[in-house]
Amino acid sequence: MGQPSPSEDLRQELDADYRVFDLRGDHYAIGYEMGRRAPMRVVRSWREQHDELAFARSCVEQVSRFHPALPEELWGYAAGQGLSREEVLSHFSLNLPEGTLGGCTTLARRLPDGHVLIARNYDFLHSQRQRYLRHVAPCGYPASLGTQAGLIGSCYDGVSGHGLFVALHLIHARMAEAVPPGVPYHLIPRILLETCKSAREAAARLCEMPHLFPFNYMVADSADMYAVEAYPGRVRPRAPEDGHLVVTNYYAHPDMRPMQGRRKLTGQQARVGWIEQRIAGDRGGGAAEAWSWAQQLLRDHSVPVCRHSATQATLWSMVADLSTRRVAYSLGAPCRNAFVEYEWPESDGSDNR
Image (cartoon, rainbow, N blue to C red; front, side):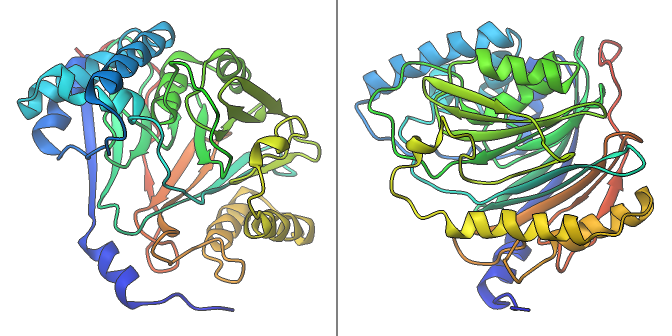
């Protein structure tokens, strides 16, 4: 089994800003508190400022269609930083295009006893310092526990009080020739966790949205699981065939494959194939055995699933049992950090005023 490079990767992890936040109140108050306590991630500029701001304002309108309260979190963040609203608009659009690639892996598996197990690694640049775990309980919305890597109001994977799980995965796809205003990937999990009660509802909402970026999404609850493959102007859902789904950074739906262009997918496909083999070879057992099995799966260096290169480092991991509402995160590479269990978020934040 291959071993990770210990030097620069470990130093970046030790220097990273791993913090856990407990945030309550309306969305503006939640954003204001984050603005007071967390630095703003810089979004690279690609075009004339006037054009970028106009496009970002149109994206605000699209986000508001699906979650009218969420933009208030970004306005609150601006106030907490002492900035104008205009100065945080780039966090709605990321000043499209963005070329940074990620390499996440997510498994949803129905166990023989009926439990739905989640195993998830989030991979990105090891120089990305902001690596937050946030319990967010906005007034009038279900609370959620999920991760954030600096983009305001964002969530990269998490669970809600309704028992819904959502995760995102960047796709190595060709750039679309034209992209109209839409919903940015980093706000989509927040929208789903706070406005949907089930995986079925979340999958339908994903199919309604105008998408800015090529991404795969995993949505699951104790009853259903779906992979939703999104590209600007095209969205296709996939349901499991054998009681599980493995989602990573390429399109599996035949209607979406042409969007990949000529990019090599051997690494991503190898990860999926290796996990499929582990599932086929697992003799089963109860939820307790599966909980340990999932953690070991996420620590693998042979494919690898746990990664340590400069552009593909595992920044955090999670395991969850959606049937018993049990969740744990490893804040850092799971091969050298423990999984810590956290309380499942409550179903309704309406009493958090």
